Amino acid sequence: MKDNLPIRFHPAAKKYFIKLKKKDKQLSELYKLNLQKIVGNPEIGEFKTGDLAGIRGYDFRHKGTTYEIAYSIEVSEDGELIVVILAGTRENFYHELKRYLKSK
Image (cartoon, rainbow, N blue to C red; front, side, top):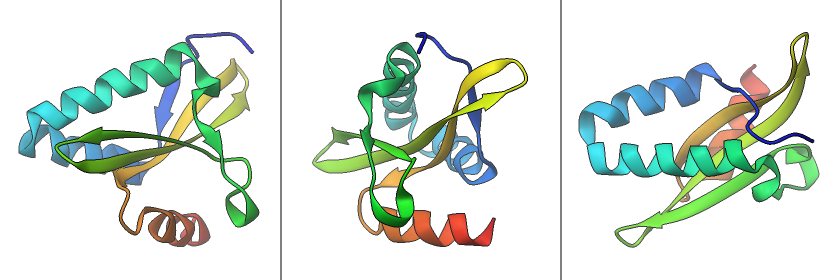
């Protein structure tokens, strides 16, 4: 797998980042930094198991709170790309992720 894959956002993740940019610039910048880490090394996230198999999770801390990024590596006509599915605080994150994936 090559490094620096392009990145695409599911609508839920895109909406979260747009709101966050207006609400908390410091946290928004931390997300950007951590997304760059994922782009630079797509295998950095841990594989999830069970009904979330195939999805990777990457987390980081900010002001005592853990934040999570759920993503997968997919293949398109142009090659591999990183797809950010959902982002948010760790609390109830995987429950929300499962619900979002079922609704797609």
